[in-house]
Length: 247
Image (tube, rainbow, N blue to C red; front, side, top):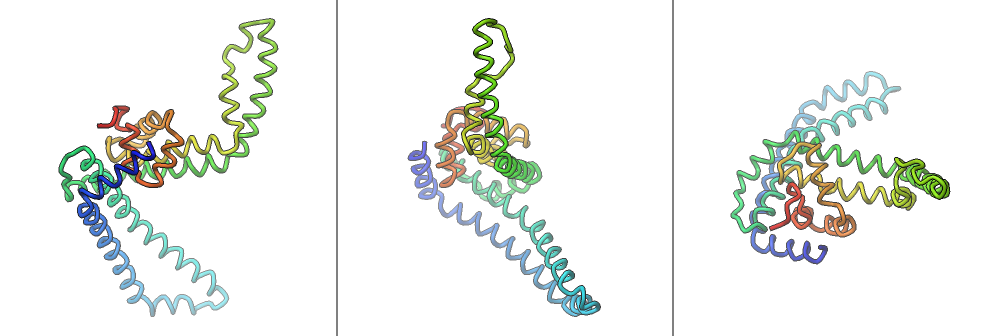
């Protein structure tokens, strides 16, 4: 899968590099406009901002930090839709190119903006899954070790009573969880496919997670490697489009 993803990258960019570059240029223009608007607004508000900061010198640092935080938040709110829509359009152009179809740039950009909310929601959930799984990694390993110990006891009991603890999970589940960062890698592989699944299905966050998890089953290590090179190509090779095999 990893060599195939690299080959897909070369094929997609060799045939449609100018379309991908144009989509990125459109997104860059939008970001430039947002930054210019914010810069002009801040510049026109400098007298008022200076008056606000100088009214209480004891609170100067905290007020400056507060203003910087507000400006950063506003920039993020205005920039994230452009970044997500541009990335979605890039994924769509690349996917259509790999399928042998002629990508429509403005149609791809329009679809990216039209599905902005579900795509942003999917990206947010994917990011949250990665962060939570990373934070819980030590706890998951401890639970895995404890589960292995209990599974050993249950195995001894089952020598006398074959139906004992019939609903207890298989020991392999706990063995996998006991390996440090194994569960984190599993969740990350699924989360990394959620964005292309949301764009190419198209799907809401829940459906994107299910499609991504189906696509990642049995391919998680290659996906982790391939997604660092070419997310749309790796998604196509993994067959994330409703579980159908790639064309």
